[in-house]
Length: 282
Image 1: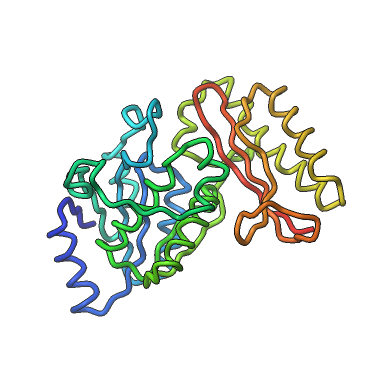
Image 2 (image 1 turned 90 degrees about the vertical axis):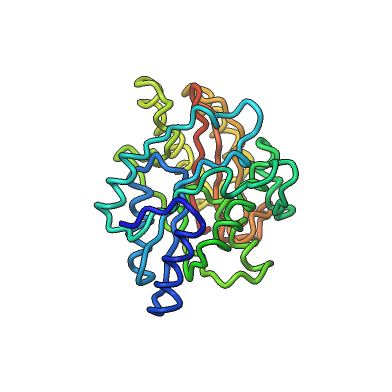
């Protein structure tokens, strides 16, 4: 596996792959601390292109004041071994200086309006501007034919798809279903923040989404279902941030006529902020 730390090294490899050998490239951007969910993205990338390029970059631009940028788990040695075992062809490890060579407040930003300000965007102002900016920069640097993202971060995936469409970026975006623990908890790098007792309760988040989903399919009243689910989360020790039903295609607020829906939730359990979602057709 090629380890690339500079723009020059990356561009040299891409010229060989894409320009000389005419190989397609699938890109998997990550922040490291890899788990089975990330490796499932790498597996999908292998099915989509001749070469698989992964990046690890903990992006300061998407962390707000008081968030966990400094303490975000960094496990590069373990990540490198996992990617080698998964057959990734290259790992790009840009520094902050590489991606943001000027003071952060002077750097150009990418904003996807509307869809970025709801849900997680309402709780974490500027977060998705940071996500869109770094993903745009990474796409420009890596020139992928395909980029692979997990559906656990449903809103992020929707924002990236909108950005790619609006800016006419020549990359196909692939979403991969959420990989879960045996009890249903969505795999996440932040699950490591959970204590043993919190971990035993964490799967309640997905169970509550399943209950709302069943109620919607049976014709239940949406707001009543969400109110009951909110109470169940509080009873289980969560501090809900949001629990909403949205239209799956564009994350607009769902109305009675909508049939393709997604239930989205974010809730704190101890110091961990857990997010999850569940698609439902009614």
